[in-house]
Image (tube, rainbow over all chains, first blue to last red; front, side, top):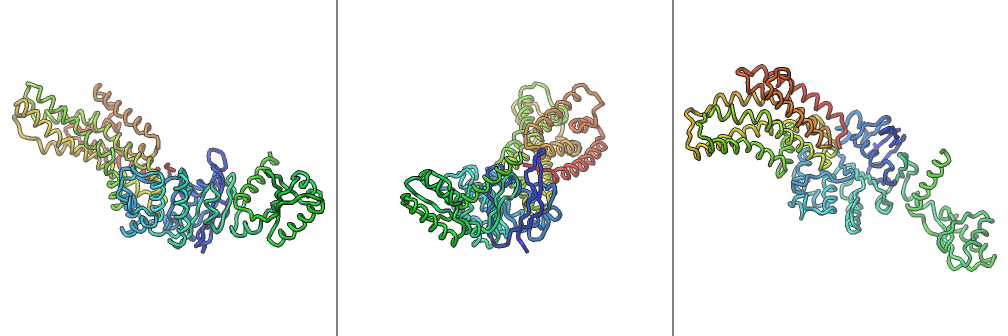
Length: 310
Length: 241
């Protein structure tokens, strides 16, 4: 059984399609990254997953239970953190968690466990209104972790944090799958945040998933060849004549390298072409594509498609 | 459901709603203290309650206090992003709203009981200062009966206020509902018209005036139950954020 099965999910708001026929399967015990710029529909998608919004079309199944038909069964064992931590400022951190635990019929020990994981045990007696933003985010995470959920949904958990806070939360999230032993869905517009923790990713743009798959496959199948030469425009023209599409960035040329084996062969050919044409080559090396490159590529492609349609 | 009611009470700890629940009922007591201590007239206990404290309470202070209390109850969730956090739990939505309604109704009952007690203290302070000791005994039984009737008659307006306070993130809406209802009730009280007897904000005043207000109270209670079910059904389907 999959942790999440989504089929043809569609949602329009104010006459605009926010989520457009998304279908997706997320395996158990994995970390799934949901990427996309602000306004892409990530939060709406997660809210539909949790049954906080009603879908116009399609189904969401959490551990085999349809959220639209059997909300309570579907949400059993699901922890979430959507947009901002839901905390009562007039209560202490511990009491905030105790209230949540009471509603979930969890013992007090679950509160201590969640506070420990989030590193908030020391500050748990303080009123939440005295907390810094980072502490609130941590307590929000602790709340989502109550009872060690088998599915944890985190929406932009580092929003508004300073670099130190982001690093802290990122370390905490990276450890979560091991500590809770469940599935984690992490939504973010920060590629670096997802890249370091996710096994699978999906890129959302204009309410659609435009790319998805195993992160290792997405990254390993794509390499760039970086060339540093004395005459960048001239080298670009030469390579173009020989069927290599080269992109000029700063003082370098970037050529798509393909997979690992193909890249080595292409690199050797390019090097030979440049040297034989008397170009001074100071460096030529293969660089694995980052998620950022894939994301940018997808963004450009979808913009091109949108432009062509218009 | 009991768990949820306990959770809702704990949320109010240290909140403005608790401060309001204590301050609003203190006003008739302060007014009783000032009026009795500065008056040369002898005031009986029935006069203090039935012609002074309760009319002020049912026409103005109680509806406004309930408006503010219900608004604060709703804002507790809206400010904390609490609705969605609760709806993402595997619990019945209706039990969340019924628990909230229970807290709101108990708040209205509590404020009235506190008002009656504080008024007695305020009046005794005024009596001690003026030396005008009421000639009669404290009207425990009639006051108890009237309190029950007024509370029952207040139930529809309490439910309506909570419905508005939970349904809308903008706190101006429940405040506008409460202020409008209270103004109508004051106008009805001043003009003595019988044309708006069914109006929820007029019902407590009617229960105070009538000698046998049990039919009004029963009808009001029945209306409150219907309204509460409709409110919970509507809120359970709504997107609150």
